[in-house]
Length: 469
Image (cartoon, rainbow, N blue to C red):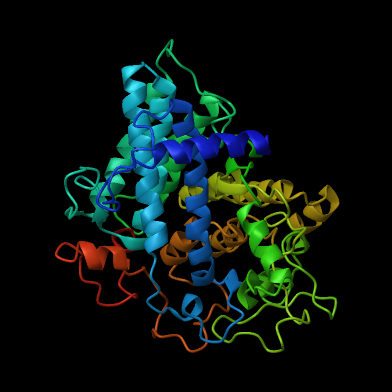
């Protein structure tokens, strides 16, 4: 499969170079590149790059959620420095553009399934972008003659994403597509239309739940989407096949070769090793490496390493851990996330259902990581976890979701919705802000090429639209 993927991606990269023309890419057309890329090459490229975009974003947001920490003191990724995010921005727009090309080709062929994938992945990518940057070019961004597109409001792009998801379901449900998804080219759901439909509803539930601070928050609509989304871990949207090493595995391997990376934050380790909550979470050993002291120790964000950084005085992403082993899956949307969304959406009206969804979310994530049943059941029955309906709080939902969403960029959305009220969560050492970070600044590719349209960002503590009442 790896060789097949490499071949498909080489073809698609060769084919797509001249087809992704937008305001981000103003180079002349390469005469050696085809102007008519194969539709399944586009499918491979779009699904693969969508997965990688979630990794690229997660490798930013995991430091803001203090799941990871830099080994270097006062690293920009830790202390809220104005780090340039041009690469993520560029890759998201290129992926969406490739998806639009696929959709256009599919429409001419009555390829409804490919059209549905194009819509779902566009919603996934653009909703990811606005969760980090807020307002962004959209309605004019894909006009090949416009290199300085206007910015659309975050709210308008958000609503466009919801419409894309609804449109995708319509396309998926159309009968007799002339061409069907190729299982080897669909690198997220391997040709399963039913799973793509579930993912459309899962992403819809995720987006609707982002509005928890707003009067428009609609638990009924969320639960309706959830009823059509995932029913088990087998439905998860994930990337499992890679042209090289899986991304987080590469991070872990690099660290073993002294290219220091993938260090566990003190916050995430203490949340699982018994320090913060008085209960040891069995998932920790399926994520992090042991120190030379035969325990788990995180690095405080902003402080950097305390020793040499090479003698295992702290914990890192383990090269055998679930998220960072060879071939580790790259998670995009999961069943466990859906259960925590259900717990949040039902908390005010059906606390018993909310509590059960909370327990189910923990169990689903433990099953995903391969935690043995005995260890899972012991954790679920611990008094710190099994608090009962009467003592159940929304804080527990966010606490457990924080662990289950390890390395996923939506975890930063949750942190901001929760106003970073995790127990013992503190600012990084030497933080450049007096409060927690709320957004990223616009990339240099925008301020250099499209300066007249780029909104002014006064502070990285400014709240995005979803983060406001």
